[in-house]
Image (cartoon, rainbow, N blue to C red; front, side, top):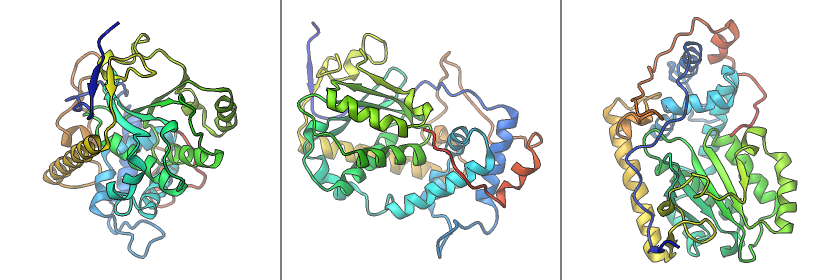
Length: 340
């Protein structure tokens, strides 16, 4: 049996990850161009607000890759993509992601280590561990806010070329199960406002009652997301993780993350803040506009699976779009499916 190494803080993010996202076709690039034109046209304002002008943070969020993530999640239907992006922009404002939901606000939820970010899979996906047995509060609203904050920090830890995350959920030690309503709310947020972000969700030690709980939850989950959920995997043996990048408890790794809040929390918060600040500064140097590439302001294009560099042009060809899609910049469609 391998020796177990005890750590108190998350490991440093890898310099780059492996991209498994296929290059867009000419037609898909054209659709991207229409979506980009909608948000960059003169006088654009986010509907439903007295001041609908996009903030710097919102423009930063509307990256090259972000537009493609929403296009993929919208099955390349341009009007649907535009509406979904606007719905998420509104939600991020209303939910307080740029002001209210900060480290100080959610820290009371974090003191027991019920959600921790630790390690990366073999392709560079950062891992978010959920440990329901460590539940320490009864404020459901702030519990969900903490989950959203953790998702945002997981994104901060993604290296260039990585756009998805891994969830590792361990129901051991008499877990205090979330309510159906709370779980449904988190799933809705993940599907509607973090599309194409879930790489996989691994779930272990599922007792009978929790299994019944999942049977109630899964009908609310879209098929794409459902296929990413795996029960009781052997994550090291099956090649998802190197042993030193996943914890020993429950997951078969060679690392013991001894959660001491006073050591772990400042390290995580500082790492994420420094990464965001550096990326935002680089983004400003690049022009500070909508549609800039994350891989560029994060430090360069990642290797594909074969090791070659990826350089996808930003401007696409819209000749293959139909008239309805060309007009989408003026008339976004109603009815938005949820995919993750």
